[in-house]
Image (cartoon, one colour):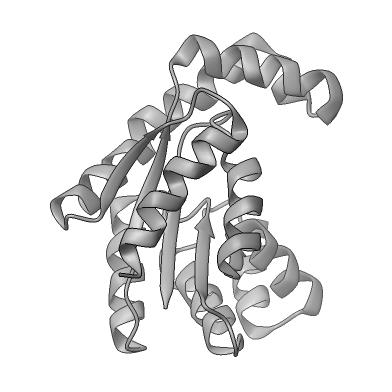
Length: 192
């Protein structure tokens, strides 16, 4: 079973590449944003717990997020694996994810990080902002803040997987197909 963490800053092309990975390898997309919407919308126990924290203006604890991830994994049969999108964002979440995966006789195959220079990221996000309708894709200060938050808070997760020998950096600049070919070479190495 392939379980991939797709990693990279805003504007790196994760959305585009994850669609191609899902199509080729028949993986299940696992987005914490989607999980939150599902659990909150359905009023599940995990959703009610998350809502309690959110209503108090607090971050939802990692164990609640991991519970949602575990629920998705356990309720998804007949998959070749999962592609984790937007998760884990912190080393604590990566550690919790590893523990939960081990408990379920699974493991993270690897982290693939799309590497793109900051100026190119800003340009891509501005271009995306012309069609996305997202205000934060059009505001220079917000774009810079999102990239800074990624570098400060999320980048240590890459080091966590690198220590495990599960980290591969891919040049995220070039043609969509060329980048995907490089990702595919890494993915094929996981399954051999």
